[in-house]
Structures are given as structure tokens and as C-alpha cells.
Length: 582
Image 1 (cartoon, rainbow, N blue to C red):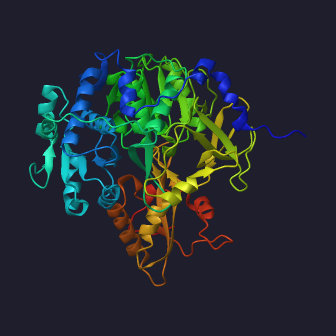
Image 2: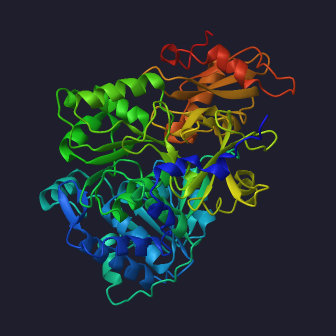
Image 3: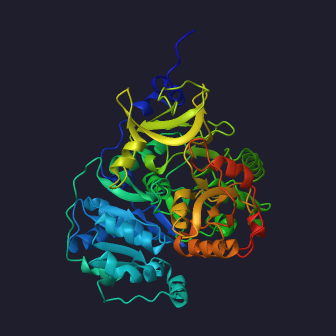
């Protein structure tokens, strides 16, 4: 019997790439520099399409330079951190690249996060400047004394809108911001303050942190993924040389939030460095995706499977020719086979050129590690590894590298790896591990295999997490920590229950074992209310139920698998906080 064939050594997927691509070196420059050099000969082409307003690359670079000067005027220098509680408005994009020009870091925080998390993320970053969207200012106002920021720069989504739309948005805006007090300054005044300053451009350092993007974690708190110049540029490079059917000037619909690794890299940096016209959507409403696609008419877009399901079923898409949409990239969650088949039929009926381009990645890999490209595709596969990436399968128990067709943990190495988790050395070491081959591999916690053509297939997860229909990851330990604080709770477990509004995805549900002589209805109602107040918006449970006894494994741990079998199909739509009938 012959020796096992080594996936990592054979790299069978490289047969799909031209040798010139394989021999092309990765860009060695700052993310800002890569953006500028990639578009040096097309400055008067459109970089952004913002609700009808066109912003050229020349105008975008002017905004970036102005932001860099304004930050420099406030004393920001290489290695400093600026926190962001903002969305993908043009000013936010300019500010992020302006900071990178200086060699500083953007600490990007989801404005929808709960106040306690925002406070912790800002304080932990060590920033002295916070950039916030105006509608999120009420949250900032409540923690201003705790976060101790010298300057708070407030953005408005209206700033870059066409004149009439700008006036209308200002009339509708309910944001009340005390400009001029406690270091609070509006964007226009912030920029004006930097007009007399010429920023000193920071030096290129490959592993310097461009941004910190937060992802869930087993500690109960989100972890900050450190994205570097080299890691974000590697993803841009991989897409550029993948053979995708795109051309500079193509319009790219950006609906993935910029404060996520997926949105920051694949939804902003990648399309802009490829010369696409990015149409950022600061506040994406999933139910309106059909209307959005029909109006924006993008040539390319990325989304989660659930968003494509909504698009497919939207009334705007009935009898609508979608031949303008060259590529639809899917990531953020695993596509169920039934939905994939329906989507392919939908795409064929609507005159789209290529199949759905499924991909695979993690925040820890700057979002992208593999993808299907044009006709390089297999049903149910997340594609082949990108040109600068090595993917292999390992036995999660023994650490042995497996061969083609063998199920194990998906591990990835390559230039797109994060630097680590921000100030989380122990958790970094758990995910980024040095193997016997001398390389550091990111352990995904995902189960899958690779076939002999180099295509990757995802089959489940090693680690516990609940994935909502929109791809958002909910980590049970966050809710379990919260629920266990209640004095009447003896034990608790959080499991995922089937989403009854969409064809895939799960919602978190809390199962508690209470102390004797406890009013079940009252306690479950209290816990449900507390979770809705304290947890992040998309991490709230759909139900809290009490059972006599939570089952245990042989190792005396809560038996989540048994609970999932028993309650995974629980109909939460018929549940009330005041009724216990399970």
C-alpha cells in the first residue's frame, strides 16, 4: 500500500493557474499605496457610486489625503490606533485609507453592538480619537466619560449625497449631536482643521496593522482580528489573478459591512484595487435587495446565501433580465444544497453568465481562502484555494495531514493570514499553530475534505457556533455567561434552533435547568427580557425554556448534541415568555 499523497505538497489546484500568475510576486506596500498604484492611470474613472453621486478615484484620493492631514493635525502618527463606530460612507472609507497612509490603525466596531462591548473595544484599543456615525452618537454619549477620547469625529451619511438628497436626509435625521462640546467635532470641521498640515506618510511595514475587525470567540467576548498590509493586499492579489471575468470600471455592490473582515477586504479593498466602481450601502435592508440590485445594476456582488435567497424570491426579479450581473460571490455561511440548486436555476432563467461563485474564508484569513471562478466550479463546493493560499485537511485529534477525500479539520496557510488576535496571545496560539513542516497554519474549526481536483467541500463545524440566516455567527458561550448570572439558574445551555422564516440558518435558544421551587414562567420571562436588553441585536435568543434536567455527557459536561436533537426543531413562533409548555 503506497504512502498517502500530501495535499499541501502536491497543491493540485495550481493546475488551474497560469505559470505567469504563480511567478508574480505579491505586492509589498501599504494598502493605501496598493490602491493608489492600482488606479494611477485611471484617476478620472469612477471609484464610488453613492446613492446617485459619482466620486472619481482622483476625488477619492483627495479625500484620503485630506483625512490623513486632518488626523496628522490631531497628532496621529505611525502605530497609533483610531476607533471607528461607523459604516461604509465615503468619508469613512477615506478616513480608513488616510490612517493607513500615516501607518496608523483603524479599530472598526459594529455600531449595532451593545454599549458594554463598544466601551470595552474602544478602551482596549488605546485610541484617543473615535470616529462615529451620527446615528450611533447616543451610544457614545452614554460612555463618553469611560472611554476618555480626546476627539470624537462625527460623520453623516448625507455628506456625500447629491444636493437634493442631502437636504432631504438632513430634514429626516433625528441625530442630535452636541458639536463643540467635550471634543465632539463634525467631519467638515475636522477636515478644515487639517488644511494647514501636510501629513508625513508612514513607512511600509508588511505586518503593520491596517485594521482590527472583530469576530466572535470562545471567551465570551469578540476578538479583534489584526488585518495587515500584506494580508489584505494578498486577498486583492488573489482575486486579481484568479481569472475572474471583470474589467476596470465594472460596478461592485458593497452590502457587507465594512467593520467586518469580509466587508473590509472583499467588499471594499478588493474591488477598489481592481479598479471597480464600488457602490457602498451603509444601511443594507435585506428585504430590499431586489429593489437595490434593480436600481444599482451591479456587474459584481458578494453576499451571504440567505441574501441571495431573498433576492431570488423578490418581486423585483420577476421576469427581470440580470445579464448585467457577471458574478455573484457567496460566502459567510455554508450553502445548503437545496438552495444552491434553486439559485442556479434562477440565475439561468435570468440570463446570468456563470454559476454562483461560492467561496470559503474566515476573518482570520482576511476573509477569503478559496472560491469558484467562472466555470471552475463544482456543485456544493466552495471552490479551489486562491493562488497564494495553501489549504489542507488535518486530523484534529492527531494532527496528521489527511489525503484527498478524507474528512478532517480545514487548515490554511499563506500571506492572507491575520497577524493574530489583538491582545489575545493565548487565543492566537490556539488558532495559529506551528506544524512539523515549519509553517504556521490557521485552524478553522470547520470540517471538510478536498477532492482530487483540488475542490474543497465543507461538512460541518468542530467548534460550537450558531450561524443565522444572514451569515452572522452567534457564539453560545456569550449568552450562557449572561444567563448563568441569574440566581435561579442551576445550569444553562444555548443551542441553535431551525430558522422558520428562511430555508437555512439557525437562531439561538436558551435552555435552563432551574433551582427547585422556582417559578419557571417568571424566571424564563426575566431571562428573555435581560438577554434582549444586554446582548447584541443579532445574538438575542428567540426563546428561553426550562426543563427538569440538562443531560450530561460521560465527561460530565452539558450534552449539547442531545439537546440539539431534542429541541433543534423547536417552534419558537408559538412560544411566549409567559408560557412554559415543552
